[in-house]
Image (cartoon, rainbow, N blue to C red; front, top):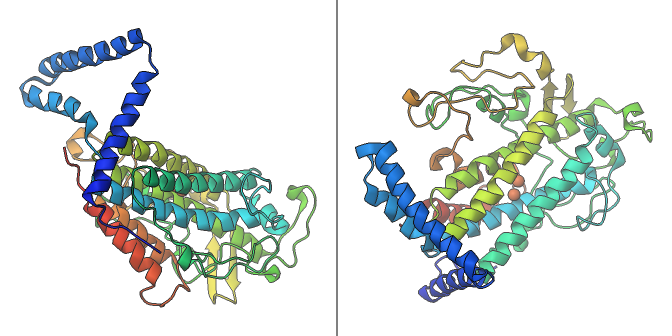
Length: 426
Ligand SMILES: [Fe+2]
Ligand SMILES: [Fe+2]
């Protein structure tokens, strides 16, 4: 694996040239009147903003600051921007790896997502207990992650920076169940410890950034202890299923149901991480095009999260002990959680399943009133290092060597530190 953590000045120069050329190319295609209109509009907006600033904001904001912001649209791509892009490209590669495993076993099987191997029918149908469209959603989330990783790698190359290559770490074993390809993996989906407090974080008025000591209830407390598999490890985990062409007529052993429900919560956990990560890192970006990339990919993670937290809430009550992981899991009916909810609770104990829209929460200053937002977006809780640590705690890298400080985690943490250290340079 080759990594260029400190791009030299030459590559940064290339970067600037690329950005300028790209800007020139786009204006070349415009007709003279379009160019004039664009220039004219910018001039107008500049003047208009000055006027609006003076009228609406009064003496609180210096007009020079507003003008300065306009003039910095052409800020070059910085070393920090590249650090952020390289970290995101590495993390998207991790996402791609885990989603490919889910898609091979539980996604719609077609030619769009490469490497699908016929699927695992009992697991795919068990996932449909959460929603009949789960296979399509799993397929499409995978497709999205493949595109995120590929786009970021291609973009890095286009600006003279080297993408991160994680293939030397792809040595974890595949599931032995029908449908899984037998290739090396970066991630382990069979020994997870899933923090399901994201559930109450978005249902509470309390914001982790605002109150770091806040306690957020777990949607499924037993997933946050012990180890749980989110995929069938072998055909033993699907044995006893009675499969019907109509999935609603099929029956499954409780172990397989628990595996499918575990996956449902894991999907939301993963995508909630991306939901916070992009807006957190966007605050450190200097170049406008790089900012556009983060602002364009980030919300697609949020679309994933929103879908998954809606589906996970459809898990049905059951308790299962898994011999292989020596762990129990209990799912409850979160639709029935209405009686114990209190949206204004500072303890974050609201679990009601259909509260999938973000509860307005504290942000910046309580005097502004609660507001519906993505949270957390501080470096401490939503940044790159926080994302890697949450994946480590999740057990995604269990089995990577050496055991206590796996090389893959060391590489990811180094990339994460550099991304978190990036600062806007305007
Ligand atoms: Fe992604
Ligand atoms: Fe994602």
